[in-house]
Amino acid sequence: MTAQELEMAKNEILFAIKPILTTTEAAQYLGVSLQFIYKLTHARKIRYFKSEGGKMNFFRREDLDAWALAYRVMTDKELNEEAQGR
Image 1: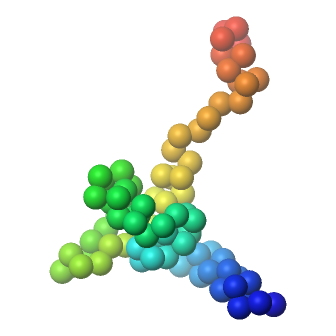
Image 2: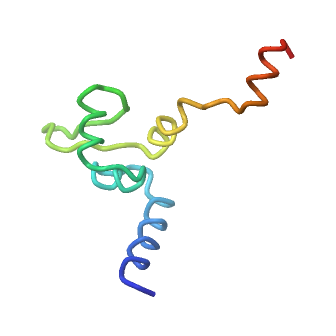
């Protein structure tokens, strides 16, 4: 197993058991850049929590999942059925 594979396996286990993630972990969990997470938090497009001093951000895994699944795209079949009033 390569070092990269070991890191990925470690992250999968970590994400499965850890309900609260740091900003870096949230980016890894979603597969996006750290900069993108900062952009989302700055625009208040994703739910997060701040530490008492305000220097750290924390994310609930369930909130990250909700954000990732918020905009479902309908299939062609679903669109056709909706257009036909079914």
